[in-house]
Image (cartoon, rainbow over all chains, first blue to last red; front, side, top):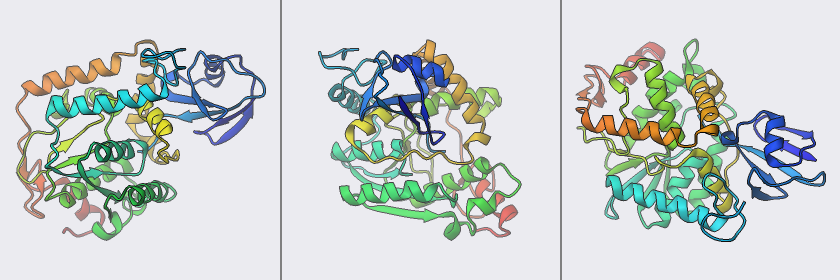
Length: 63
Length: 288
């Protein structure tokens, strides 16, 4: 699936069966990010499929 | 995952909340914080210290929606590629909502942008001193200054002051600062809201917040403390709340810090001359 990672401003092709697995693959703690799947905010237990477009948003911003 | 309050699908976990109940929860926590600590009244003229990031837009949005009389005050430090983007979001939001906005800058008030001021020094320490100075100087006449400090910011500050053995600030946390001459009280309506929940709130509410991280953040101790705290919080969600509640408990029992009046500029100061005047003399070669 196509994954846009906001903090590093990169787009990657990755495989993961769930949001939780995707975060493990990317090395993010759940506290650090929110995940948007096909335009909708989703929780870590949600499943992912190869056709999904995923955005991993960084909770951290500002200074 | 289902919402803990209804049958809808959750959009947020910890607690599990659907979009409707997430918004309701965030606004309820803000109202409870205002009531518990007597942060402000509807008669107050509130200055919101705003950057255009998610936290300050959330404070502005909620206080405005609750019918409080708010105005936004932004400080443009002069950090290339960063502040101009958040200020654009802030201008757009204030214009749409009809909220007055004032922007003061380091260039106009201090003489140089932060990028030039901080040559050879840690930019965060220079930035913090002048930001606090300008905020207080320009918030005079308002009843309170509302800031976007959230639960993560506060928990990080508690740990940072322990790590730095900062005796004066050790476990000194306030949702509303105690009264002090020449100092407009600061209030923190988002004090008990996790940063992650605030971001979810801005997404659900459709507040336009672009992701921008200050380029100096990776240099700061705060970033390291933040990352470690988030790893702990991933296995113990209550840890941030417990840290700030402990700090509030201790702060309530400690005497307030007594401020003096700066001999140079007349602003509140910890010593005979305020830190902003000392720094300004060193970095720019003059004082106000």
